[in-house]
Amino acid sequence: MLILNCPYCGESADETELAPGGEAHLRREGPESQDEAFESYLFHRSNPKGVHFERWRHAFGCGKWFIAARCTATLEVFGTYAAQTSCPPQEIVDKISERRPDRRGASGS
Amino acid sequence: MKRYSAFAIVREAARHHLGWQRAWTSPEPRASYDVVIVGAGGHGLATAYYLGKNFGITNVAILEKGWLGGGNTGRNTTIIRSNYLQDPSAAIYEKARSLYETLSQDLNYNVMFSPRGVMMLAQTHHEVRGYERTAHANALQGVETEFISPSRVKELVPIIRLDGPRYPVLGALWQPRGGTARHDAVAWGYARACSDMGMHIIQQCEVTGIRSEAGRVSGVETSKGAIGCNRLGLVASGHSGVLAEMAGFRLPLESVALQALVSEPIKPIMDVVVMANTVHGYMSQSDKGEMVIGGGADGFNNYTQRGSFHHIEETVRALVETFPMLSRLKMLRQWGGIVDMTGDRSPILSKTPLDGCFVNCGWGTGGFKAIPGSGWGMAELMAKGHSPLTEAFSLARFREGRFVDESVAAGVAH
Ligand SMILES: Cc1cc2nc3c(=O)[nH]c(=O)nc-3n(C[C@H](O)[C@H](O)[C@H](O)COP(=O)(O)OP(=O)(O)OC[C@H]3O[C@@H](n4cnc5c(N)ncnc54)[C@H](O)[C@@H]3O)c2cc1C
Ligand SMILES: [Zn+2]
Figure 1 (cartoon, each protein chain N blue to C red):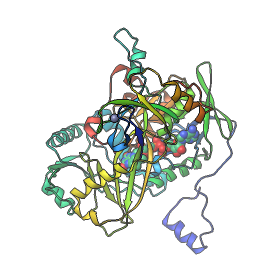
Figure 2 (cartoon, chains in turn green, cyan):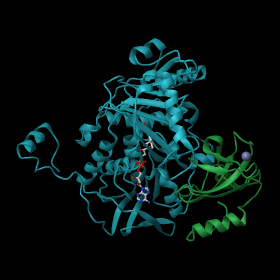
Figure 3 (cartoon, protein in one colour):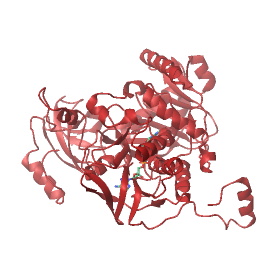
């Protein structure tokens, strides 16, 4: 069972309290964008076997959206942080490079 | 290759079973092949088989990182049906279902296709309308289905409870020629036939990189060295995204865990397949007597082949309401597979941005039933560059907004 710490209310919430929301840090494309970019924004997902940044909602708790950094190959959780960011905070990036030294590019998506 | 037959059983019995041949060879890879297929699941093997059978292309290698049939092909609950809503889906799934009817004869391998009938319960009024619509669509597509009444449901499945408090049974979509087949046998039968045509099935060979020259695929790097090819087929279900990244493009896919479980074996109690999509549960009884049960997919990206317990709990809770006698059963085993989900819940059989490289993926929770049809279409696509069966399932549909939307129609799509 996956357990994530909600960065707002501090609860350790198990999966049944949470609703998954897919890949985080996607850049929204506007009306002026090219078809390719819009297609990518809507459908393409990095879907990595490894470190994944993803949105979750503390659905049966405080109700707020947050972001989790997690490994999809081992289910290890590197940390969670508030949703109002466009890239992961430095401490999470550091934690990931410490735990996954071989990983290319430690930024979001 | 010696054929399997009743006579062969007698012959081998008479000589202490010493004369059986290996079903497929285990060769070392050659430096290059005309076609390389990545993934020896049902879809990869069927693609190779029809490349050989329908197009005479036999200089083919199928590379598998684990053992053949060890992916979702060996983990699924084996439901076969073709009662989809959209025309392109009906075409490819019904092609597959009809090929299943004679697959054992075609492959000279008993895949135990059992057209026992598939029943999809309607447990809300919304579902009744949806399935009536599907039945009408199927009539136009030439797929034999029928919307049946609750009393007919009870006749076919005496152990069912029609008046459950939360989800009463209001009718069902019935496909009498749907059913099940033996999943391993499908992989093994295709593998044996491919090997017999001189193709190489190379197990324990993981593809780790994809080579290209001037925008065209030229080969793959593997744990057994580099292997060249003119055409490459990526048929790796849950790992398709990982392979696409090696090839330099992205796919509209997410990989999540889907689980199944089986009970202790009991005497025959149900001789059809029943699916209850509103409550995410479905069930059939295997020849050994085990109740084979599956539910909905987990919600988050996952490559571990382990799912979450609460999904199983939800599935079993829902099924116990509709089949009260199940509450006394012990469950024996539970497992998971990593399924590749697209937004419209339809597969991708397509050319890719890399010339000569094709994908066959996105079958998600429901691709076992499609194996022969998918292999048939994919082989045509790889041999000729286009196929009427696969046209609607190209990658271009996402950019163009031409979805083959089965998500609403199927709810859960096994
Ligand atoms: C629990 C469960 C229940 C299901 N129930 C049903 C059902 O009732 N009916 C139905 O129709 N469908 C069902 N499905 C879906 C069905 O199993 C799949 O859609 C289908 O088996 C996919 O077949 P495949 O050949 O594409 O993939 P797989 O059988 O997964 O084969 C892909 C192969 O690629 C290999 N591979 C991956 N990466 C690499 C690499 N880098 N190098 C070399 N090899 C690689 C893998 O090891 C694997 O063997 C179910 C799935 C699950 C998990
Ligand atoms: Zn919270």
